[in-house]
Image (cartoon, rainbow, N blue to C red):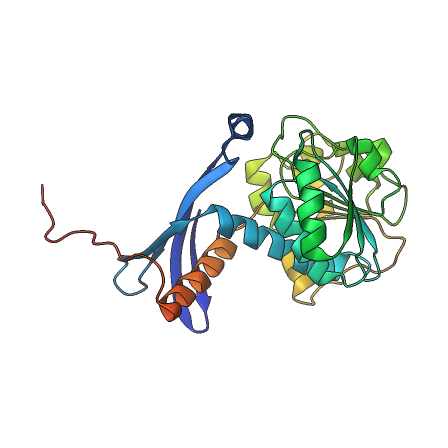
Length: 279
């Protein structure tokens, strides 16, 4: 995932290399692992290498924070969470910052992680978080649902569990929500549709591929954040949002981490070579 960003008048070059395998979780490994490399804008020499997992989780939570400010009613008090991994932690931290009234959550995961999540994140966010015994129990009756699971081979949330009007669904991972749901959403929002379409496994990409909704129904988040299009227009509006994740987000966060590390004098300096061995 290469990127060139102009930040504060300076060019920031970087690339995230990451591999994601849902089956890793059963092996006790992270679902996604990788590296981010930043390059000097003038010489194109590598200037920093860092782990990509924390960066990915952080920027994903930050995107949901920005989206929630525009798409979710500000007085929302409860959220249903499907998934209890690292990314769901940053999701909840972002949502808590975006929605000051958020006080309650129901969380479901297939394994025991939901109990650890509820205990630790209740303490960290000062929210009342309750583990649910099933995905349906967590979702039923909720006006705001967030899904972020390691499995993406079939939907975890079914259409019939979601209320008819005034609901917001954030689908953070892959094919997590039944595609038929999108036929009754007032709005379907992507972070950048052209990238979602090329990957073709997020719920809104599946819905378009199956003819459930036309491609023209999908809009990008950018114009909403820039004030060029309206966010939520009424409480009765039903909105589906799903980000695929964009390289420039990772690189901007990584650049900030790098600059802060230099300022604090932390990190390890690596010698790439003394003299190059030319072929």
